[in-house]
Length: 355
Ligand SMILES: Cc1cc2nc3c(=O)[nH]c(=O)nc-3n(C[C@H](O)[C@H](O)[C@H](O)COP(=O)(O)O)c2cc1C
Image 1: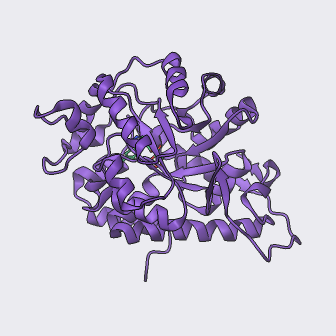
Image 2: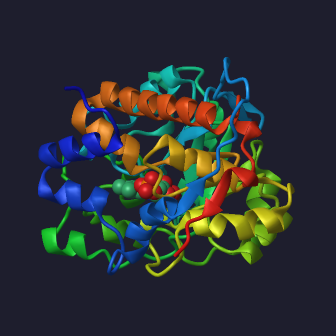
Image 3: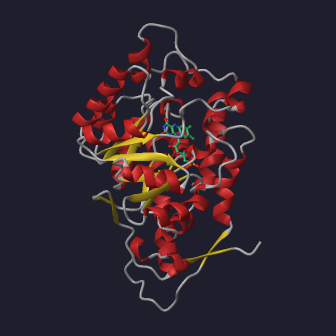
C-alpha cells in the first residue's frame, strides 16, 4: 500500500538513504533529548472538540504575513536537500508551489535562490539567512533572494556555533564533492570543502540585536526571526523590527535540553500579544499537531523532517504526498474539533494531559 502518513515516509527514507545523510537528517544534538521531546510534547496535549457545529464546509486556507496560503503548514528551510534526492530544493519548491504554500530556502541549500525560483516561478518563498563572516557574500545572497521575488528574510538565530551532533561524528559525515552548495562555494572559492560542522565556522557567531535592527531597516521585505525560545527574546525580536518570530529549537539539532517548541509557544504568544506573528516548528508529524499549535496561538507551522522523508523516498512526488497527507489530516481534525477554518481553533480546544 502507499505510504499513509509521515511515519511511513520516514521508514521509506531510512531504507533509501545512505548512513551518512540519514544520520545528518535524523540526528540532533548531544543526547537528542530535545529532538525526542519536540515530538513527545505534542502527545501530552489533549484535544477538546466541540460538537454539533456545522462543519459541512471546512477550509484550511489562511494567511501568513499577508500571503495567502492553502494551509497553515509551510515548508521549512533545510540545508543540502540534494543529499536526499538529486532534484533537491527544486523538487521541494515545485511541490510546495503545487500545494499552495510557502517554502523557506536555506542559506546553505544545494541550489541557489535564482535556481529555486526558476523551478516554480511566482510561488511564495522565503529566504533563510545565516550571516557569513564574509558580509559581501551575505549581502549578495540577500540581494539575489529579493531580486528573485522572495517575500521575507528569515534570520536563523539559534545556530551561532555548531552543535555537538554525535551521529555525524560516528558516520564521519562529509558533503559529497560533486554536490554544489552555491553559497559555500562563494565563500571558500576554490579552497578545500568544509565539512557540515565546519560550515558553521564560516558563519559569524557575533551578530546581535543591533544587526537584526539594521537588517530590518534595510530590508525591502519583512524580516522573520527563526529560533526564538524565550518570551524575553520574542519581545526583543518585535522591538528590533521582526515581522514574525518562529518558535524553534532547530529541530533539536542545536541546544539540547531546551523545552519542546509546543511547550515554549504559550509564553511567547502571551508576551508578543499580537505585536508580530508567531510561527512554530519542531516535531510536527500529524495534522493534529498542527491543530494543537494553532490552538496555542501559532499562526502556522513549518515542517522539516516530515517533508524531507517524502523527498528522500520519492522526490517531488514524495514531498507533494506528505503535504497532501498533512492537509487531509488537518482538514479532518478541524472538522472533528468543530472548526471550519484555522482561525476558529482557540486555546479552549486543547488541554494538558494529566501526568
Ligand atoms: C537536515 C536538516 C537541515 C536543516 N537545515 C537548516 C538550515 O539550513 N537553516 C535553518 O534555519 N534551519 C535548518 N534546519 C531546521 C529546520 O528549519 C526546522 O527548524 C526543523 O527541521 C524543525 O523540526 P522538525 O524537523 O522536527 O520538523 C534543518 C533541519 C534539518 C532536520
